[in-house]
Image 1 (cartoon, one colour):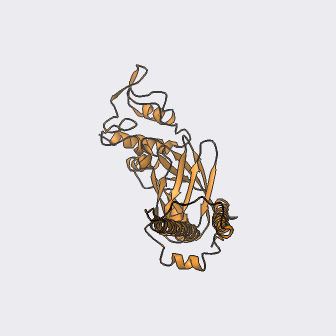
Image 2 (cartoon, one colour; image 1 turned 180 degrees about the vertical axis):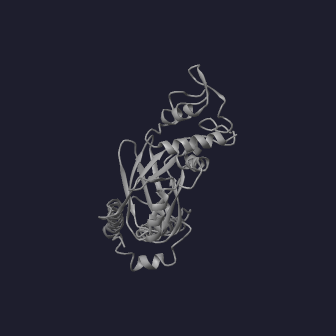
Image 3 (cartoon, helix red, strand yellow; image 1 turned 60 degrees about the vertical axis):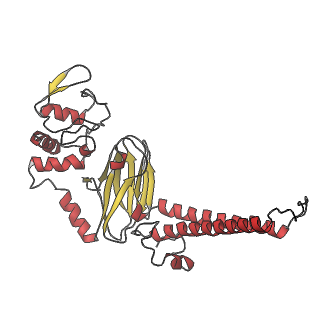
Length: 329
């Protein structure tokens, strides 16, 4: 347990009893989720208490001191109640200081990963997540082992994004040109949604992924098999997986509909017209160039917003992607 609120003991434990999943919060699936919730509900109920107190006192004074013809006009008075003034100044000060101290301790716990944490690279771009493991394998979903601290080293290829896993109570902005880090330790196997919570353009709401928690032994087996995932697949089958895994699906449809980029359906062998007035037949070389140097030939009617995938596709992956596009008759 991270020492965020002293282990959520005493009133905190009572407050959170049976609160693993509530109206306000999703299921708790990390070691510090209960501590984050304890602070949240502590602040919530403090606000509720003072809201009800102020409304009740206001209603009481409105009734008690309402103006009537029989009651004389109030006279100006310079006297005051020192005890009352000290109480209403000191009590809020103590509450605010408590929130600050507990919140700051929690922030530091969330920011400083323990020694030996398992490191995974996270790359955010419009509109896709890429998770890179120590062996070089890349996946569009986040796979982590159960019961082991995981440190995410995050970067953005374009604009500001924000990595958020509600079940883990993990959220942090990813700013271009610098690295951001967060960590967590999962306490349950299963799947949890990942969101981008910083508006990053047209398909922001589609920038989704899944955090999948494995048993420790199962995670090692999955990673070993995943690193060789193309074995046993035809180029077309592998290309279809790459279409989603590499983020092509975010901008290029396969059903003929127009998105941020042109559709792949029935495009191979047809002539493409470009913004500079030139044109060419869409063949293997054109697809390869468009992946590695996408601004070299920009199709009429579309903006040059596609990032380069130089160094992110090896030759086998390029061949598989081309095979898949060719199959979309």
